Amino acid sequence: MILEEKYTLSNGVEIPKLGLGTWFISEDAVVQAVQDAVTMGYRHIDTAQAYQN
Image (cartoon, rainbow, N blue to C red; front, side, top):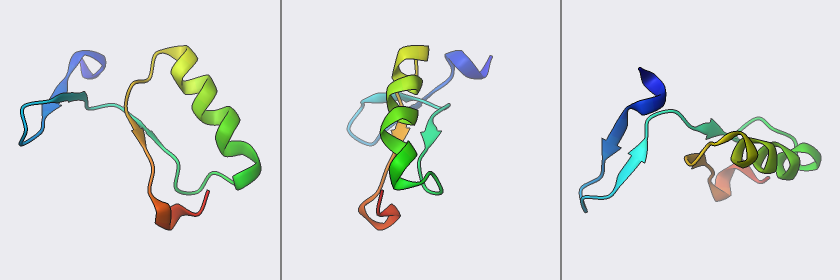
């Protein structure tokens, strides 16, 4: 099941395959979206400086 699947990074660290992508979330909404995702159990949050949020 996807909720249990993980990727193993080159340094041996495992991260969940399912994550929250923040690319098109507005700057006004991104903080709440990340807080809600963590509350729901997400542990993989995809962010990047280029997203500008």
